[in-house]
Image (tube, rainbow, N blue to C red):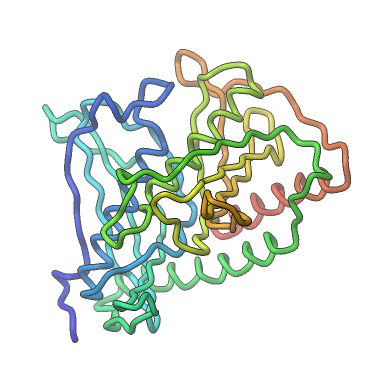
Length: 313
């Protein structure tokens, strides 16, 4: 099976609705993450010709808010393939529909895996770069893959136990039929919205204000599918505070509500900042690590910032 340049990209266009708004009045980061996942899936499914699952979402930077009523354009493009994986660059633009002038709001790299009818990884058509621009995009995806490995190694060294004293919140609920994706599991974008909501609750609890916005979400790793009807537990824990930022780790676990242990489904890091009426960042109350685990996770958050800064230079 071969693919033409017309199969590489997929663009979704729609208006941001009032129901998409978050506490700040603009569209919530969780809703934007849903859109990113849907566009990425559409591009992945078009490329591989089968069902595909979200495996990883990296470095989603929220550079500007998406306003309710604005025209939104989410473009996903296949930039690199492995044996069964598709690396997809996703960009979000928005602006007033009256002018049609769209400005960049987010961009990120996603990894989808093609699966067959039995849920096993399936081979995908290779993406062969055509021209210097595509070779640069492929090189960017490969560089991100190296960084992803570095981040995952750093994450694997950390422990999240009851020995930690950092502020945390836990949300529990059942995965509803309305959360289903095209493969009968919970949509990856829905999981990312839950992550954003839990992190926002923690940020609000710590800052004492609901005027908090996500500026970054990264290292979103999907370990296993989450099924409709399963009990879902979303735990957000404060890892580090900067002058105006709250660095939060979020774990999503799920399992049969009839009994048994909940298994890790997804993990990610997200960064929130408090804002004033002019959307300027405001200082946050500092958090001081107490236990050895607290100090290790605080240092881990700083390490991840350094890794991300190196790749963006």
